[in-house]
Structure formats: structure tokens, C-alpha cells
Length: 241
View (tube, rainbow, N blue to C red):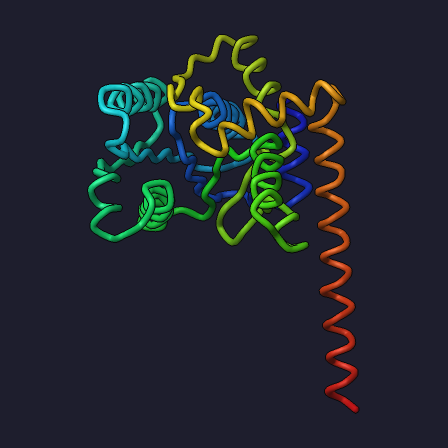
């Protein structure tokens, strides 16, 4: 699996030698796997590693547990650790925003305050599928069906070609501890319902659904890229005539 991550990094040109890579570290399996990978390969990749965590003040003691877990992991690994505490529910209400939307906004604002060349998030193939299904259910364009980009500006997603199951199996095989967000078990949230119910039911039709749907997303990306390039060429020809 590590070789697959390295190939993804190479495929998308995610990292350059001497980059400072900031890992968005929540403490869950995906982000811990990503941090563990970079810790193991930082000399090979010739990078400096930094980890950042936001304690959102949403899940009470469980949220504080996650913070302490991540802090301890960074201390044991000898990795520079940046963090902030916020009260997302109160602050989101004051700004008249949804808690999830506000939390995401604050995360990336915080990451941008930290000096780094790349911001690595742990979005994976399963997240990508859930995103496209969510957008499709609500109505989306061809662009929206392209899913989560592997690279967007400074943001890189080295786990984008791995499923959640593969990541958890890797953690278990290598004795990598992580924390679990209890809200992930609640199907009251749309994304959880897609993950726990919709995707699992689709796997009953095709056990390889995740790979099959990922192939569809890749085809959509090619169609979108071709359409944009074709339109740009037509526009250029029209402007010269």
C-alpha cells in the first residue's frame, strides 16, 4: 500500500524535495495513516513534516480525547504540532452558517496561517465516491461529478486512490492506533447515510462497486477536461476571426 501512495504522489506531482508538508491530523484512521506514512518516508521524500489539529468543541470529552491523542502522537513522533480550539456550534450560529460549513472554513483558514509548501489531507477513494453520490442526489454538473481533486493549489490528497477499508486494514496490520468519531455511526447525517447504507447496499449488487464507480469518476474527469479544452480552442478561433 505504501508503494501505491508513493505512485499517487508521483503521478500528480504532489511533492518536491525540501517541501514542508502540513498534515491535517484529526486522529482518525485516515489521517493517522497519512501522518504515519509521511513520518516513515520523510527522509526518502526529503520533506519537513508538520501536523495540525483543530478541536472543534462539538463532541465534548470525545473531542478533547482526540486532541490529546493527536498531541501525544506528535510528541512521540517528534513532529512539530500546531493546534487551535474553537467552539464551532456557537461561532457558526453567530456567523449564520452551518456547523459543518463553518468548521471546514476555519480548518483551512487555520492551515493557511501555518508556513508550509503543501497541505496534505486524508481524503480517500471512499470519500470521493460519497462526495459524488451526495452531489448527484442533490443535483450536480459534469464538473461536480468529477469529485475531489487529487491536487488543488497547495492542497494534496495522497490517499485518494485507496479505500477506507484498505486504510483501516493497513492500520490494523501495522499496529497503528487511531480514534473513532462516534458521530460516524449515526445515519442522521447525509454523508453517513450514503456511507453506511447506500454504498453498502450497492456493494451487494457489485462487491467491486467502489472500484467501478471510481472508474466512472475518472471517465467523467476526462470528458470534462476534453470539453473544456475543446471549448477554449473554439473560443480562441472565434476571437481571431
